[in-house]
Image (cartoon, rainbow, N blue to C red; front, side, top):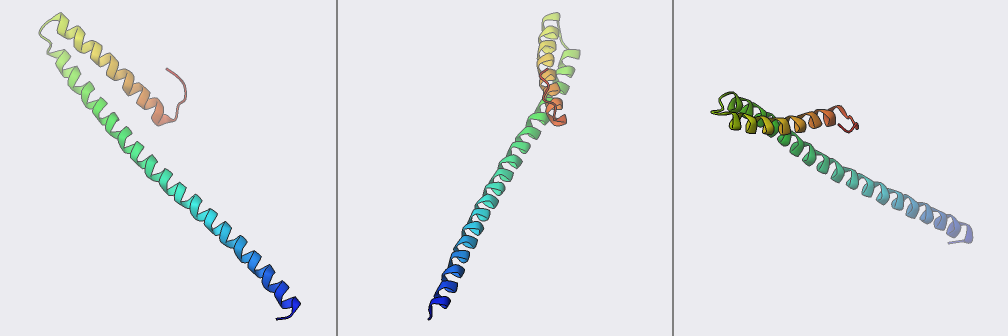
Length: 102
C-alpha cells in the first residue's frame, strides 16, 4: 500500500470511529429517553390511582356526613371532606399544568 492509500485509509478509519462514537452517543440518548418514558408512565399511573382514590373517598365521606348520627360525626366527616377536597383541587391544578400555589 502506497502513502496516499495509507493516508486515505487512516482518514476513513478516523471517520468510521467518529461515526461509531456518534452512533453510541445516540443509542445512549435513546436508552435514557426510553427509561424516562417508562418512569413517566409509572408516575402517571400512580397519579391516576391517587386521583381515583381521592374521588372515591370524597363520595364516601359525603354520604357518611349526610347520615352522621350526631354533630361530632358530622364535623369529623366534614373535616375529612375538606382535606380530601384540597387534594382534589391540587390534582386539578396539576392536570391543568398549573404551577400556581393554592
